[in-house]
Structure formats: C-alpha cells, structure tokens
Length: 248
Length: 315
Image (cartoon, rainbow over all chains, first blue to last red; front, side, top):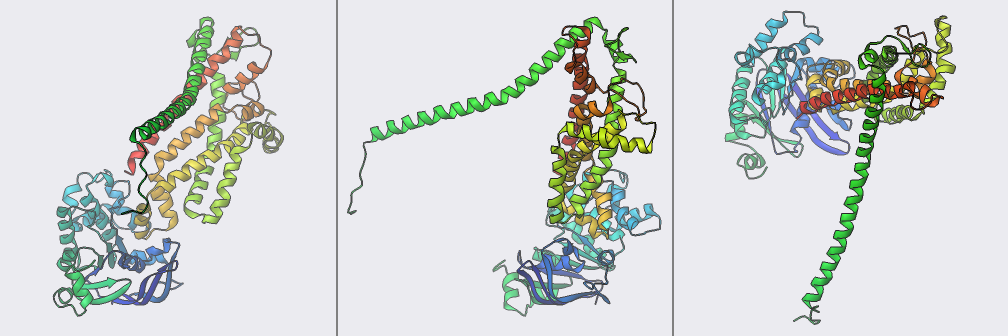
C-alpha cells in the first residue's frame, strides 16, 4: 500500500467532515474519489499531504494516515518531506506568475535538485504533453497560457518533483471538454509511474480513467472497489442510486 | 363574505396624496444630491485654485529669473546679495533626505509586512497593526524634535563630525514617518495574492519562507513598487520634521552628516520669516512649491500606473 487512511475522523472546528474512514491505495493505480458536493472527498484528499495544516480550524479527531512506512501526522514528520513525495494538482490551475521555466524548476530547485534544469523542464513538459506547445516560449509567463495548458503546466510542475503519489482535486472542473480529454489521456499515460488519487464530480470521468473507485457520502466511505465493480455491480444500494443519478 | 367590508378611499384623493409625497421626496432628494455634489466640487475647486495660484505666482518669479537658470543653477542664496536662484541644492537636499528615508522605511516596512501577512497570528497582528498605525498619527513636529534631541546626539556619538542640523537624522525620523504607510500597503498587497498561489507553492514542498519570499513577494511586486513610490512622494513633501532636523543651509552635497535645506524647508523659512511680499525672494517660494508639486504629482501618477497594472494581474 502506498497511502492508507485508518479509522480517520476529520473536522473543521466542531463540524465533523469525515467519519471513521479507512481507505488504502496501491502503487501505480488511478483511484477515483466520487460523491456529492460536501461529502468530504476534497478534505480527505488534502489530508494525505497535510495541505489542511493551513486551515486553522482543521482537526484530525482520530485515526492515522500512512504513506508507505511513514506516519504522516506523527510529530517527528516534517510536512515538507511528505509533500515532496506526495504532489498535488488543484481544481483551478494555479501557475506562478513567472516564466514557464521557473514554474517547473522552482520546486525541484528549492528541494535541492542538482541535475540539469533545462533537461528537467523538457522531460517534465513532455510527460505532461505540453512540450510541443510551449517549447519556443519557455521564458514567457505561465499565466499567458490557456486554462487547459495552465493545468498541464501544473501537472508538469508536480511531475518535475518526481513524486510517488499525485493527488488531484477535480483537475478538470475548470476546463473545457477538449482540454479535459487531454488531461484524462495524460492521467492514463502517467499511471504506470505514479499512484494517483483523483477527486471528481464527473462519474463518466471516474469510469474512464480509474482502476479503483471510492464512493463517499456524508463523510463516510460507502463503498470501495474496482471501478468496473462499482459501476457495473455496486454492492450498496446508495452507490447504485448515486451512480444512476437518483441523487447527488 | 368578509365580515368587515374593505374600506375604499376615493382613488383621486389617494393619488394626489401620493403625488404630493413623491414631490416632497424628490425635492429633498435633489437637495441631498446638490449638497453632496457641492462638497465634492469644493475639493476639486481647491485643487484648481492652488494650481492656478502656484502657476501665476511662479510666472511672476520666472519673469525675474529665467527658468533654465532656476532649474540648472548650482547655487541657492535668495536672501543674501549677490542673489542666486539655482534650485539644484534644494532638490539635492530633498532627494538625499527622502532617499535616505526610503532606505530605512522600505526594507523595514517590507519585512514587517511579510511578517504581518504571512507569519503573525491573528492575535499578534491585532496588536502590531494598530501600533504601526499609531506611528502614523504622531505629529510631524514631534518627530522633528525627536530628531534634534535624540537621533542627532546618537549620530554625533557614532560620527563625531555630524553637524547639529543634518540630513541623516532627518532621514531617519522621516523613514519612521513613512514606515506605517509602506508597511500597510505592502501588507495589503501580499494578502491580496490568491490563496491558490500559496497552496501551489506548499504543494511543491516549499517552506513558508520560500513561499513568502520566492512566490508571494515577486507576485505582489508591482503593488510594492507603488507603495514605495507613494512613500517616496510623501517623504519629498514632508515639511516640519525635515525643516527642524535638516537645518536651513542650502548645500549641494551628498554627505548626509552635514546640514542641508530641502525644498519644503526653504518654503517654511521664507513663508514664516519677514520677507516682504512681492519681492523676488518671496515669489521664489511659489517656484519651489511648483517644482515640488510637479515632482509629487508625477510620482503619484506613476504609482497609479503601476497599481493599475497590478489590478489586472489577478483577474
């Protein structure tokens, strides 16, 4: 197992967001987290690389999270180290307001990368399927790209860190259908190399790109299984109702 | 059937009553608008009046002294024969004092702003922010006295050649006068950067310092530049503290330990002194004030241009 949450209960202030949830994600798979808005899937995702540390009211009420052998919320663990291994792509593309080159190299550079930066830029952009579009303007601003390109730049930026896991929080929800298709192809290509956990609203997307699917409702994990099982033969009535679009 | 039938007032009476009421509201509405309009125009008219008077009186001065001599002359002795009206020593004094003030206020203000925006807990912030703003409320003349009675003796202790009136102590107190404005504007600029930018940085395993200095600072650079320009403009226009601390010796020099006269300092000296109205030396303060006005106006316009560029960035 690469990432495992055990008996996890999470809260913002007094509001319990995730209730006694256990979930384990294996290596080199795409796992989709589906469920209606407000079911706690984004909160869960952001807990895996301690991004919720910046939310003052966030509390981990009980349970633990392991990244391989590492207890992610142990006092001895530096959250910066966790984020070095577990990257993240956000809902809205958020490139830095600086050159494409710097967008890619900044993370590795501050984390002690010693190799050839130009080579890193090229290989990361190639793996994010963006190289051909931007190779002649690496010094222009990342903000000058289109939304879809910006999101691929953010994926390239995450890949450049050579992480083990990439968390994606609705990475296509701000994009048009064509850009969404490109990002989905990209995710499928990248899965041989990284474990990916993807929060999505879009059930077709989950069925297209993931091997495993977890369905959450009101902070609880209702069902977790292979994507084909969840979509073709859900064991729980709630899962079936949600997938058939009866609520959500 | 309702037990109490509806009481109907004749429609005509109702309508005329309503019309009367509406007329009354419209009248008071118009009065309010006119009043507010007048208030707004008062400040516009004041500005126009000042600019016209400055221009007119300066023209009188420039009939006696050619503009080119005024702008390029290296000697300023308007009160003692042989008279000379070269404004460069005053500009030099102003720039030395103001740049010195910025050299103190910009690093200190920026560092405080980063601390306030990114590090301080809400509690610490609620303590520090009002205190810094309190600094802005201290009267200028108090800063001037503080410069003479405290800063200058310390400077003299460190550099024995320091004169009693000197540009350095004026710069130091002026720096602290400009500090609240620079801190507050930079703090706003850093806090205006979107949260997604910070998260992007943290997700790449950056520490807080790396995110603040490498991402947020460059991202808010144009607003920071604007605040520096505004601070500089404020320092140029500041009068009382500078007139007290820097002295009244026009001096085309870059040595901050000597006495210098700034443009504002000269205006105070002449306006408060017994120079007779209508003389060329009296007219000279309008020419100096006009020059000062052009300088601060262009700085303020420049900062607006920079701010407008910044506003576009996060759309």
